[in-house]
Amino acid sequence: MLSLAAFRAGPDAGRALPSLLDGAQTRLVTSGRIAIGLALRALGVGAGDLVLVPAYHSPSMIPPVHWCGAEVVFYRVLPDTCADLDDIKARLADHPAVKAVMVTHFFGVPQDLAPLRALCDARGIGLVEDCAHCFFGERDGVAVGGSGDYAIGSSMKFFPIHEGGCLVSRRHALDARLHSAGPGFEAKAALAALETSFSYGRLPALRVMLALPLRARTLVWNALKAARAPAGTAGAAAAPSLAPSSSDSSYSFDPRWIDKRSSWFSRLTLRLVSHTRIVARRRRHYLALHEALHDTPGCRPLFAALPDGACPWVFPLLVEQTDAVAERLAHAGVPMVRFGASLWPGVDATVCATSVELGQRVIALPCHQALHGTELAWMITTVRQALQASAKVEA
Image (cartoon, rainbow, N blue to C red; front, side, top):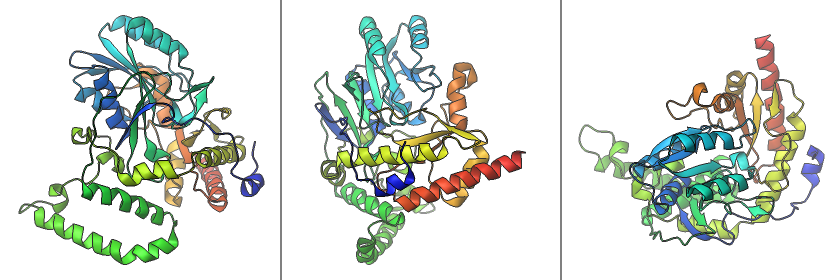
């Protein structure tokens, strides 16, 4: 394990992990959910078909299935988030109309997909590898994205960009044709990425330089929204969307973005940012969090160890007094993810008790490559304090 002292002093070293984009046919789109829609379309999924989806999921995975005209059947996951292969086999036996299976590498830890790949091959079923949490990594020598017929990624979870996803395949040619969403989208994507950096105290000199232009941009945009709004309606409701809803944490699926490529700013960032640095620093931050919190009363890490081939999206922590701790962390300003806290309607303990428990108990902390040592130390202290305070109230 890595101590905080070693974290502060250590270099950005570490072995490189393969990227989702390495050695694959690639289409850079605006979000992971758009990539799911493209993957299902490429597999020929349509009306009357069924798609198997993990019961532990983001609700954004479901609308692309419905856009194709298909329906979803949920399968169970195990406590370590791996797909329950026995349950998948049972679902396939009960539902002969299954056309595709989606499987997720949760929180950046690659699963062993060889058994599921063999099952899909034997049944003639397409496999969509969901790498939204897992842009880098490998398992048993197989790179992420290498097992599925198609794989999808969410680059905005790993890179400092406002929008971005990808459809990749190491098995099939990609025939999706993409074009730009226009100059308004290109400008929005670049400025929004910068504004997010400014909100976290990054790029202070550039923030000062752009303060007046950004203020003028806001005034002009508000005026345009007001001018375009019909009488008696809210301007925001009538204004055209310059970026997909996925950039604002919505779960919706807008098919108008299905043929749009990712912005020039996002595509350039993917090329210029050091992939090795992202992997090394995310692993170091994750290990520092694990060392500091693994024996703290009231919680335990979801994963006992971080595999060598994993580049984490976040640090998932199983918390006993989840809601109370989450409320205290939110009040303190700690960024966190409650993945699976909202599941698709109808997914309850009768479908998969493990998925419901994970959604209720997991609080995921950031291990972003841009975290400073002081920020990490503050976050660890704040989490400990929230756990202690919640334990006292419960007692």
